[in-house]
Length: 555
Image (cartoon, rainbow, N blue to C red):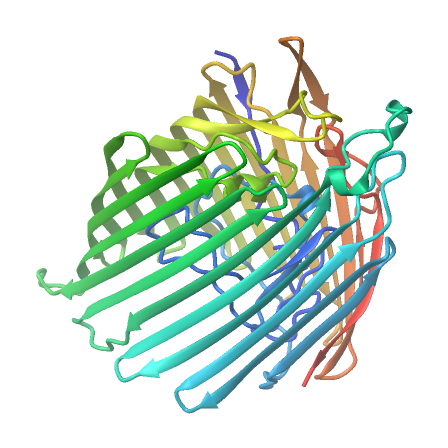
């Protein structure tokens, strides 16, 4: 086994560094950090089955993502609470929000959101987004893209219940541009042949009890359906039912909170492509006992997971969490121990790598051990520190390798391997004079693979530095710097593997927002200021520097 270090980019480049660039209020938060696609908030799960697509549609909580730099963090430890600049902006109740912008790569961005009350007990939400780019990368095959989404939500108060119903539709178009047409002088590259299109339809209904007593029975149930489809007739249907119940008690003669909870869920997948069909099912139950006092938190539970494909398998995992508070809660020690079994769905693979082949194996990924622990401290009034470690042992984790059988080697296959992962994260956040916020994050993760040469596309180290400066009540500046270390890619030719080193990179983004009045803002944003055409995947470079400008309107 070969030991490798893996760090995955921290949760979408846009989240921390310029979160207030276009924010008009807590309910009108728009971020532009890059040149790929926007997303409206999608569908929310009850956190029972990890494979259910995040489908919450919250009007006003939307972001334009930069997916050409997005990787996924392997560990999510006890993150520092975000520090947001405080201004004297009034909180007006606008029902409509519009963002319109244009990037220098002929990249229009448009977002419209509406939120209003139809009656005293009913509210309605509507969201529309579009982001596209029409200039191709130099020397590469056509690389334009176009992504659009539409969503509606309806919330109803029904006596002691709240019913939330949501619908979303997404249409995404991209090109498999990862090759040089000049290397194939005798081939006329048909743009349509390298085009991929994804469509997503999501429906969800969620019923939550509205118990207000301190010792009551809190309960909720959700039903969701998703359909994911690509241009090459790969289909995935997913249906889920989830429920949660929690009952509070007063066993102990003190102020400690005690409760017993049960989360349960059933999810099914129906997959088909041009060669095969497959059905999968998962049944989950998570009972737990929770205790919380002035200086501690404790959760004692376990998870029973039954999943089936060709055979049925049942797994039992611990579900333990604990926290100890000292020094008037300025110092916190925390830890957790768990495990899980997850279905690697086609939608999950395509979301992480949109250039994946349409015909790939989809396995069950079993995390046998997942330990996390660390310490979080408020060192002084405005300085937060967090240090965490993690150990994970997972069977059948997925990795991407170049599909050398594709005509232009411009797609990716999926391979699986058993891994052991040791992770470390260090964070610091500091606020100065209520006008300047800075944050630093360091991630380091070591992978030990069982059969693969290395953990492909897993960076060695990652550093994030971000800052925000409020010059005054009308003018805000933001910046972020990301360093991602070396990653390894794999290609095969005649059965022989060749490893390719993807160069470490630095990504610098800066932006500004000017508030004309309560209803009208102007923004500018520069992405990848150093103009580095680093590879997101092998032979798939990101766009260079791009400038965005636009307006936001509330009414």
